[in-house]
Amino acid sequence: MTSIMTPEELAIELNISAKVLRAWLRRAYPRSGTDKWTRWLLTNEQISAAGARFSKVDRPQSVAAPLIELRRREEGRANSDESYVMDLCDEVLAEKASRQHRFTWLTGDTGKSGRCALLPVDGYYSGHGLVIEYGEPQHDQRVPFFDKEDRITVSGVHRGEQRRLYDERRKREIPLHGLRYVVIKWSELDADSRGRLRRNKVSDVKKIRSLMLPTSHMS
Image 1: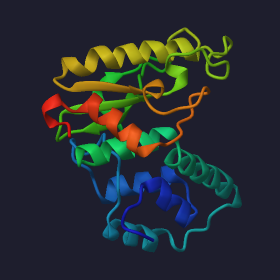
Image 2: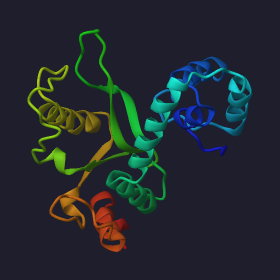
Image 3: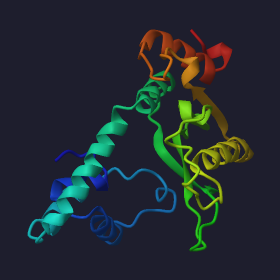
């Protein structure tokens, strides 16, 4: 096992529930308030301790299928256009983003339970005071899969409309907290008619650089 792992990835390695592992990690390795809302990357010490703790646990076979599906989803995200764009942003800014970052002040609408989820952003660059979002086709086009009218959300509207509402909330709230907010749309990069990026790195980096950096910093 490597030293760069998330609790979900380690849970797959150990063949246990990610929920169980996270609960144990929080007790054994409490996180600071600052780190609480950032992606948790485990250290060698934490990985070894978890391996020793759960090595003799009897694991029901029913746990395996959800963990395999989780790994597939994470692998899909790693190969996604969003991940490709964020990798280029990391390169241009010479800083690794906190991906799927959540701020305590950026929340969704309140659900029936009285709680509201923290809205993720694609990438947060604390060193640059910058938030980056990759605008996929569903953010500015109607996509049947995302916009099904029968899928009513906690906001009282279908998923497509809720997505638009939350995009507007990010656009409004993030600058109010002293951060620069940049949306890189698929249509601004080298993409086909369906919105899939051709991954023309030279062209894409040039465009991303122009969107993110002041003119004086551009090469």
